Amino acid sequence: MTSGVVKMAASLSNVDEIRDRVILGEFGVKNVHSTDFPGNYPGYDDIWNLKKFKRNFRVDVVHMDENTLEFDMVGIDASIANAFRRILLAEVPTMAVEKVFIYNNTSIIQDEILAHRLGLIPIKADPRLFEYRNNGDEEGTEIDTIQLQMKVKCTRNPRASKDSSDPKELYLNHMVYSRHMTWVPIGNQADVFADVKIGPVHGDILLAQLRPGQELDIVMHCVKGLGKDHAKFSPVATASYRLLPEITLLQTVEGETAERLKRCFSPGVIEVENIDGKQVAKVVNSRLDTCSREVLRHDDLKSLVKLGRVRDHFIFSVESTGILPPDVLVSEAVNVLIAKCQKFLTELDSTEME
Image 1 (spheres, rainbow, N blue to C red):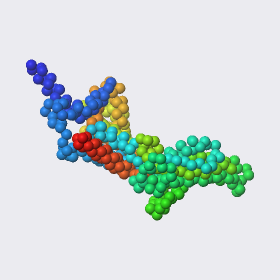
Image 2: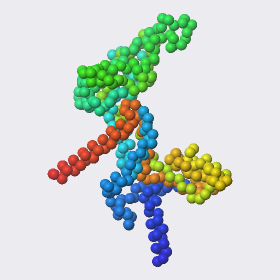
Image 3: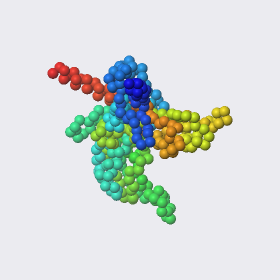
Image 4: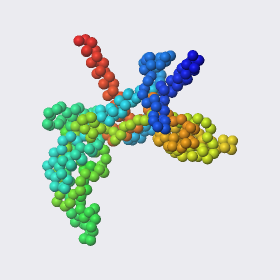
């Protein structure tokens, strides 16, 4: 009877770890599934509560520049974090080349290959200012279409040296870049977007190489679309998340062992400090760890540390293609998720009415 009580107490002491931490072992990963649902653990109130959620949930911006954003989202389930990731990849709209009208292409690149390359060029235009084009509409309008034009013809450089063999000296316009894609306003777009420079995000993307006599004469129509329909509409180069690493030293590690332990982790995770004349290992910043589990390969080191990850602490990395700033993309993803929830609630209400 007594041994049963002891076992029960021991198992209850591990409940918090099972609920809150993912444990990285030598031969596997434990506690990978969420288990904090109502009634699963005696004595724990896991019924979802809005006030409790507001108290625990937070978003911390760690780093942001023109095209990249790193932020922490704490206090949510993996399903919600993954929803944001998938929406960023596939359901935040952008403008991209959809139709390519090739009037002349005497380069060595086939029409289909050239059209595909043009479609993948990120277009600097705010998709929130445009509407989706209706299915079946052949002609675009100023509210749903951006028109771009590219007219390039390669000629010989009359000033080139006779002894030169460098194409940069011999030819003019022999390299066709994305900067040759110029905006042609439709309707009142010139007035509406007077302060906005519409065109490719990057002007140095090589599209084709020409030789004298070869030319390109192309008109492109850009429309609003979603990444789930075609990857060219995806607004991010990458959007990913990882759980916050947690490294716990189970005992004091000193001397040469501390140095070896330090080398088992990413730079900056563990540092060796001088304490009372002894070199002692200390966890400085576990966030930098890549969770390679290198330390578990060493028999004398693996018993000194415990590797884990915080289950509800997500480190997001968002890299924009340059069409919209990364912080705008995240807020747009939130709006998409809100719209999905509202639609779901509306469908529930309509079902109850029936």
